Image (cartoon, one colour):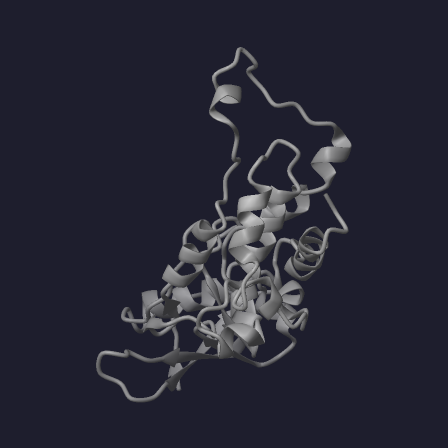
Length: 249
């Protein structure tokens, strides 16, 4: 185990063991773990411990991150067995002396903790994640498409998606069906279908009315359990099925 020095001079800081999964698909045949002893405070995040290791011990650790405030969705990974955002997860909240970080499930690994997002972005684009309006409406003198608070309430929760991929990582169906559109895309399909300004409901419902679409979801609910923004994709999928079955219009 490597001892990371120079990270914190405060003698009151506690020490935790950080286990980082290392895997390069271009040359490795299996995943291995490297362990580092890192000092932490009650406010230290998992991302901070990883970056400290990169700075003071091993520059080659591959990790994706950006905003560090749970907004961009870049630093999703498996932390102690659960999909989480590393910048949003405090080490003290894990209640463990060992912090194990691994790449997200159901995504191809680029290297170490960084994964490819092509499948997530492709399925997101597939459901037309934008307002669909008639061209003549867009060319009118009307500058805004106003909504009542009640209309806004129908979808605003689902507009909080940051495309971090945690829901897709937690989904058991994503692991068994490489063509499944996934909870992220389905929840976003509901977000636009439920928007009173949108006119693309019929086309979106046709896209997801497929054996690898909405009917492939088994409603495990694991997607909603890991969402850092409270989007609740599982509920969105169930509400979307209401449109599919004609219970909602």
